[in-house]
Amino acid sequence: MAVASDNEEFAKSPLQPLISVEKLEQVFDLGKGQQVKAVNQVDLDIYRGETLGLVGESGSGKSTLGRAILQLYEPTSGRVMFHGFDLKQLTRAEQFRVRKDMQIIFQDPYASLDPRMKVEDIIGEALDTHGLVKNASQRRERIEELLALVELDASFASRFPHEFSGGQRQRIGIARALAVEPDFIVADEPLSALDVSIQAQIIDLMQKLQEQLGLTYLFIAHDLAVVKQISDRVAVMQHGQIVEIAETNELYDKPLHPYTQQLLSAVPRLDTQFRASDQEIKDAVPASQHVVTLVEVSPGHFVAQ
Ligand code: ADP
Ligand code: MG
Image (cartoon, rainbow, N blue to C red; front, side, top):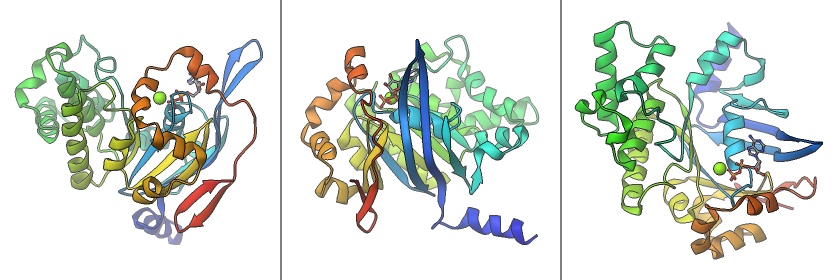
């Protein structure tokens, strides 16, 4: 009884992180004895209701970190705590339930939506999988509610992804993620495939939804201006490690790590890095196994030494 109420306290406390990443490591085997350490000993807390921005050049390990947190990969070592529970220690049934609480929004809404499925089935699939609706009329009602939430017309339900613009497709991707009422969303470059004017609308929507639904975001992006606008804190990733993390204004006003300074001074270049060649990505692979130590230089501002 005491334990249960402690856990409840824990889950509700805004001072406790919603997610704690502890010494997380993700190694990919490339065959022929070659390995890539895409995430190297990362420690990271994500607080309830915040947006944590994650920046770093192509190949620095941002997507891998996001996916490893969601347990889409089995971490090589380290652990991810969610609501205070070690995700690896959960039973299969618990894992299934917890996965519902953690969703992802992808960069390319078109590639991530099955072109043969109607919008109602793209969104409805998640409702069915988790048994969230009892019958067809409940299902339809919930789908309409979700479409309204992302500011799309109910008539869109019976149409196919190719009938929509990029921004509308991203809204469908967001509705699909929200269908299961998650607490936490990894948004992996959700704006990179969109026109600038549309980007602003999607940012607006994401902020509104965050407020309305109490969502916590890990927002991965190349565009440092976008990250600055949406994030409460920003983490900078280089060679699979976090090299600096701070409250957003602090990081942009007083970047301390040379790599952060370089990123901030190279803002116009970042868009082209998004289309980095395979060679560039290989170049970004960590050359050494050196693990940095983050030191708190002022309250909440950590820099790698
Ligand atoms: P980012 O999202 O910052 O561009 P990624 O997380 O995609 O970086 O990639 C980090 C490193 O891990 C890169 O060297 C990439 O080539 C490698 N990598 C990512 N995913 C895989 C995979 N599934 N298999 C092998 N290597 C991968
Ligand atoms: Mg990526």
